[in-house]
Structure formats: C-alpha cells, structure tokens
Length: 336
Image (cartoon, rainbow, N blue to C red):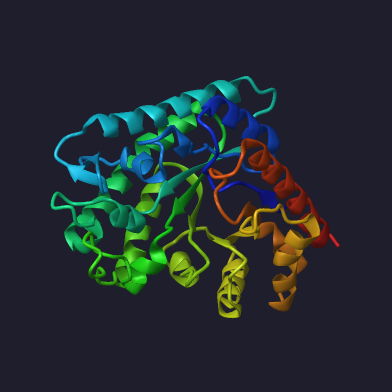
C-alpha cells in the first residue's frame, strides 16, 4: 500500500459536472476521488439534508430552525433527493467518458449521532434529546444505505466504494454541550456505548451494501479514536493540527492493527496553502516519535483539515494538487 490523497467532500460552486471533472482529474489512481457535496446550491445540498434524503420510513422538511422530521415527504425532501440523484448521474457520465477510471470512489454521509443532533422533532426540539428517535434515525440510515451505494456502484462499475461517515458534532454529543432549541439548557450527554452501537449498526449495513472501506470523520477536539475503532470502522479521519500526544498514542495501536489514518495534514485555517514539506512533517514527525515504522505509512490517506466549500474553485483545485504532492513526499519517506 502507498500513501494516497482525498478530499473531505464539500466543494465550492453549483456545477456538479465541473466538480466531478476537477476532482477525478486531480485524484486519479492511486488517489481517491469523491462524490462532491455542493452546499452552495442551497437547501437539500447541505450535508444534513443530503443524508436525510436517504432515510427509510422517516421524512424531513425545512422549518425556520432547520430540518425537521415529518409525517410525509415535502418539497425540501424531494429537492435533496433530486440533487443527489443528479450528482450520481453526472458521476456516471464523467466516469464513463474517462479512458481509465479510478479504482475507487468515496461518498460521504452524515453519521447517526450528528444526524440526530441536526434533525428536529415535531415540537421543534432536537431528535438527539429522545432515545427512541436516536435509535430510529440510526436504523433508518442503516436501511437507506443499500439503495444509495447500489446507485453509486452502477454509476462507476468496478470501482470499490469507500464511505466516510461524518460526525462533526460528536464531541458535543458525548460531552452533553449541545443546546436545546430554546438555547437555555443543554441536552444530556449520550452514553459512549450507545454511540458505539449506533456506529456499528450503520457500519455493518454499509459493509453488507458493498463498502470496501469505512472511516469515521471527526474534529480533532476530543476525537474518540478508540471508540471509532471499537465500532468496527476501518479507520479514523481527523485533522492533525490539534491532536494531543494522548490521541496520537491511540492512533499507534490502531495502525499496528491494520486500521487507516486519514490525516488532515493540510491545515487551511490561516488562509494559506501549507508547503509540501510542512504538511509531510505534520505526519512524519509524530509517526517517528511513536516508533511506527516508515513501511506502515501506507495506511495513511492525506486530506485537507476541512471541507473546501468555502474556498474558491481555483483554491480547491490547488488543494487537491498539493495533497497529491504531500502523498508523494510521504511515499518517499516510506521507501527511504
């Protein structure tokens, strides 16, 4: 295995054809192209609405306070489903026109806990408040992934499917710091074991649907690396800039056990594109300090620290190009 590059999913602009062409052009084999999310298109193209459109026997619409669970699908649900369908059709057209198609394709889904934190019940409160709602959302998502992966697989025949489950709110879910709809209180923390079981339910459904690799993507703050691995994920995607020594020490046994690290090595927080050597060092220095062998660097995929939707298309393009350079730099380290 060798170090490869991928993006996190969010992409600037409103044109899925342009996005697919750029992403697949920059991230050809051995790298990992992805099905872009284009939130600039508006309601239904955001990560939450996009994943909610896959739910089985649960429907959503948009209220002034956000996405809400409802009795029957409305226009917002249909808009989200239509946008996702368009993106898959575009992927089929762009991939079909290639001389050599990529060996893999990645899709992003919001994970069950952040989905429950972002969806609201009929009374306006977050679904995360209610154990039954959390359970139903996880089960509904697990039921919905089979059809989605089947459609993507048909669009890129022969490509292995890689799935990134995004849990941007997981630290707050586990800490009990997500506010109620009134903002005057916070919701009770969800127990760690329930989080693990929710992930395991969705991961098992993704495997049954044909996913070859599944990682859970989390922010670096209190990243629950050991819990992600315990849930059966193939790896963790995390920005490197704020990882503590203790968190790196959780990465080491995971790598030694054959798990993957999707390293958010390209820190875009200060508005400039880091140099290749700087991003390579962000991985290589702690790797050596942990005593991990250079030969195990092949378990790494390099990513930006954040999604690229808020950058210009030219910057997003430059980020992907830089990521492949960083992957090359790490491969040089791996091969001495």
